[in-house]
Length: 211
Image (cartoon, rainbow, N blue to C red; front, side):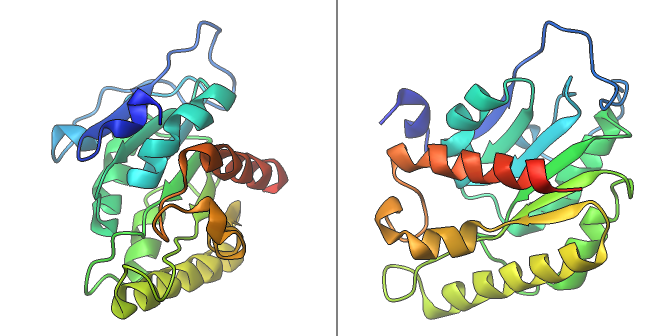
């Protein structure tokens, strides 16, 4: 396992500053006030592209950044889904017009979180921003509780419903992919080290097809 993937419990906010001029799809960098813990602060992406995630994005960041080095990834082990509104608010503080936002939050469920909460957080983004929703997955019959398995399944359905009604919004079908390839997972939730490339490629394939 690579050293980067051993930082369990630590925040991962990886930003690679591009050496080329910012593309037209990136909004101008801002320096607005950000809120919450330091681990939830974001830095402007020269590609106008942001990943908001939990441990899966933290572990997968090396593979994703190898493919898209100018994306900003803010991922934290154990990050609950309820962190999403604050993360989006901080994103808007540095980029008023992000081109794409990948939301990989849902593995760490919180009682009382609703579809309306997802919608309200996403509604903070401009309607023209491309949003990629990574559907969460927890395998049944293993270490995860039945309630947890059912809850993340419900989150995935909400993501699909949101994508059908919001323009420029697409589902990254990680749930279906992971359930079809249990051998990729080390604990029924997190991919094995050599499977994060497939995870990253799925995000990028979805992004390429999303309009």
